[in-house]
Length: 239
Ligand code: ADE
Image 1: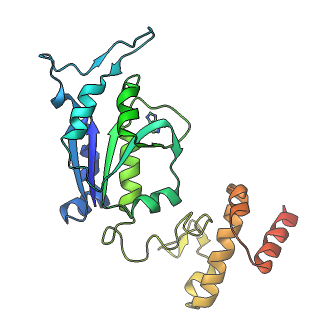
Image 2: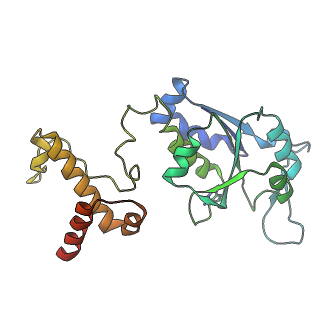
Image 3: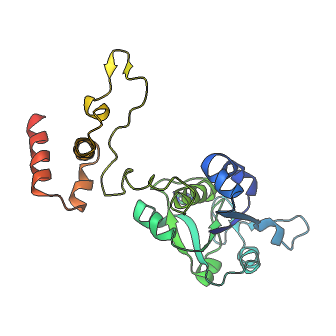
């Protein structure tokens, strides 16, 4: 999968060279190409922004430099995304949907944003990573690239995304590893029993319990069996 990122701060993406995403880049499973918007400035001082018409604080990125930077990319069959707090909030469903694309072009704003005319012209899908405002779209772009990359074949081990939080609408069950006893606490007996059916059942119950305690609103979005509904009802009575 190819990611073209339009940014004024390409150096921020150095962080993507590490860990799992870094390995995926090395293996050529994903390609992150950084385009510095400043390279498209026609100004002798490489200026890309100016004061807002109508007054107000901060600087606005000029539409012509953003347009020229975008036009330098082969955008055939690509999907353009603009990272913006005004966009639709990114969730696991959207992440999975985006992972089916072959080529994403991600536009990062900075300062007070980008001149609206080029946004209207390019008509990107606007994506937010949450209801808070960051200094620019670079960190959100990295969040998007990281979360989407996890769904690309070969980035994670085969089944890693199957049973994680949100994959079935529930939060993930707790995980344990060695040592078997830590500060007098033993790992749950069922997990060392080798009984796969019981382990599966225990994990599903823990997922239900954790979701009920931490994010109960998620339970309204999924279909539960009668048995599971009863299990939750009993949890409710325990509290
Ligand atoms: N740019 C600034 N804040 C943002 C956010 N919350 N999501 C996406 N892009 C942003």
